[in-house]
Length: 293
Image (cartoon, rainbow, N blue to C red; front, side, top):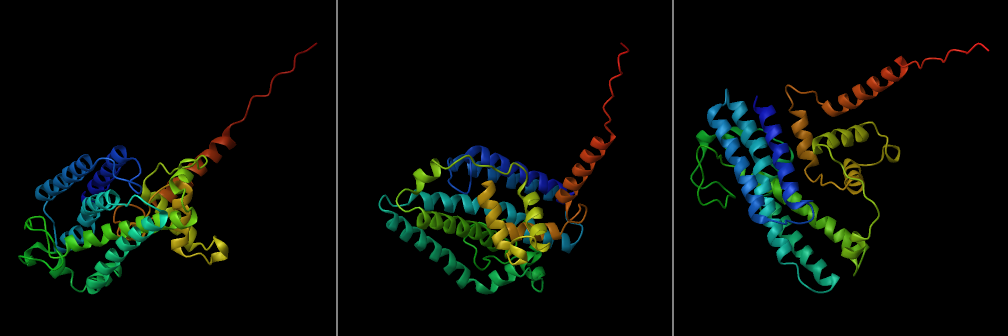
């Protein structure tokens, strides 16, 4: 029940954010509406948890380690991206490059300062999960948390930091993308983007495209099997105008599926192809009768 509800709630939040801002990987058009959307979603998530208590510690750990950070990271990301874009200097491409490089260093420094926890996050380790992600073990001022008021019913020692790790990974991807564009198209970056030819965009759920990406990667069909998963993700992002900065996190979510198939979308693709071929094979046009002269 929890997985189904949170997946639907997350998809709804993403859709609302894109309706408000367009492409979230480029700009925040309306900070107030964006934060209201995320806060409302988080309140719905909290209410659901209150009405449906966890059956065991494992469920609580999974929620505060993976599910809540997936939502709350968007709050952090939207605020940080808004401030970054609001402070972009008016000047040459070199000035803008220097600014984005400075922001990238700030993000990397945060990962370095909290290296122990970041490696725990990256490797999906479990040894300290009970201390980090059970509310009963919450301390007054968790390490790395800038929150002034921690809700003991909806917080643990590390869920905020894990949310920030997710948000900062998205910000890092955004900054790297902007820097690549600046270096490839000096002095006319924004005009070049506007004048670009017709673009194709992915209109399905991001997690569906992640299934495709990992399917391509694990079957070694790109560049004779020499392409890394990051290359596959970047290719799909550029081709389909989509931000897959949380690809690894989403793949971990796929691995944790309990009621859904690990390859839900790929299964749907296969079934659709089979259905189309079966229907085509069954269709036999009537042969017109010959008229006797």
